[in-house]
Length: 156
Image (cartoon, rainbow, N blue to C red; front, side, top):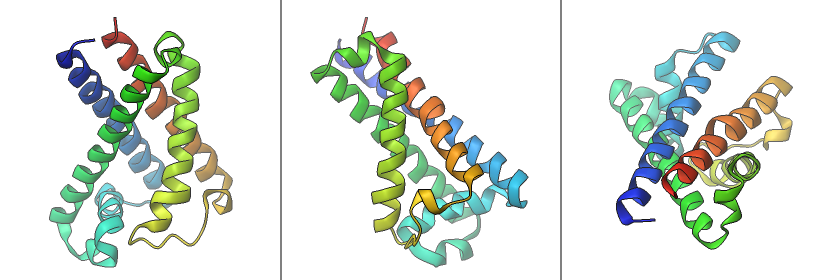
């Protein structure tokens, strides 16, 4: 795979995963609690800024969106580089992508959020079932799977 295709795979895979994930988060939170999208984006920024993110208005919402897409691009880059070491990730993208999504979910919820300025006090299995199941499914089918399929597409 050429350098241009590698960059395309990472950018496109990360973009698709980022759009699907943030759309799910905004729609689910609005339907579940009436939370506006700006609050969801500020909550992403609060991982770095803490509670002050909620007083930053549109600026911290945009920062949260940028952080969100940076994380999605990192997830796509990791999948891409792992697929160079483990070719099965390219030859079997559906299974590997879904499993990768589970891994991303666990890492985000059990490590990243726990170490962030959000100071998460609950692990994902303590969340309400709708949050647990929805979060896991979006990571499997909205993050892992699209990234895997895009990497496969640009690996030919």
